[in-house]
Image (cartoon, rainbow, N blue to C red; front, top):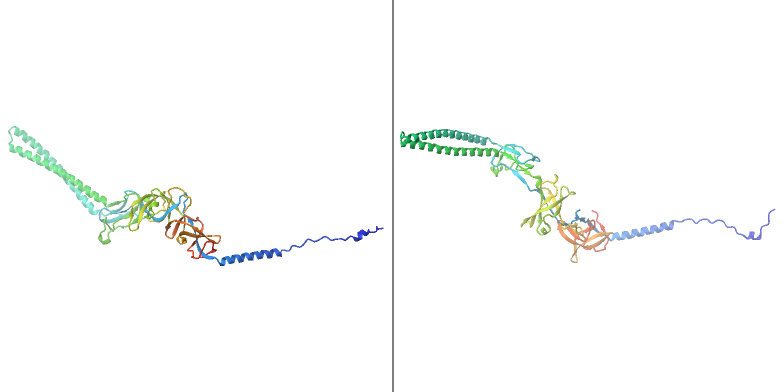
Length: 404
């Protein structure tokens, strides 16, 4: 039998467990979309009013040694020691023993000329020398006999067995033969000198290298005439070939006289060959030639390579950067296009592109080389500058780079 419910139990209200509220993402999505649209509208508005400009990157000129570039110039590789090898006399080329690129040593035979006529003359001189020596031997024998005859006559005259006339005749014969012997000895000397002269001319028919080097040009062929001077209406060669001493390679630079005060002997230089633009070659100034070219207003400067390399060839074009000889500089110089430099309010300025806006910077121009300007202060390497900025461009204006 169940117990009767309490009146309080009948008044109790039963509650069901509450469900968790469902997550609704739409408000967040809508808010994000509104923000994106607002950002796009702002960007479009800023781009719509941006000035389209052309830019260039500023390049540093400072070397790894910490020195800054004080002057840029260009020149050519030259060989301090080179020669066009020719003959001493005019002759016909019989043999050429060189080719371009061939290495030769001092005294090495490079060519031979026709020596037939000279050889014939040498043979005649040798024969004349032999004849002179034979005549000298004959005279020596005659002189010996004359001396003996003079001694006998002298003894007979002392004994009054020979007359004074006989004595005088014997004495004069001995003295005449003695004088003739002395003349023949001089004739032998002359004949020997003549033989030596023709031997020298025979040697001149052989052309030799004057020093160690490399053949760069071959200018004559067998059968051609060669002469130490121009002759024959242009049909006579003046040289067999050109020899260059590769150990004497250096750089010659014509520096504008307005900037020669930035160059001094021993100054470090960085050279770059046009053929190898990524190869930086350490050099130094040898000498400044103490005279100026009045036509070009330049002064010649000689620059030596710290270490020679087979890739460095004579007459190659080379660009050089003269370094600050005083050590490290507070800031490296940078190079920008000359068209990026403007004159505003009496000062040199450039516009730098930063965060999509033009930022005006005051600069210091230290040098101008061709289409480039070298700056010693104002901007850093790697920054973008506006080239040929429009007159309407102002500091803080929005800009966008022109697509080339």
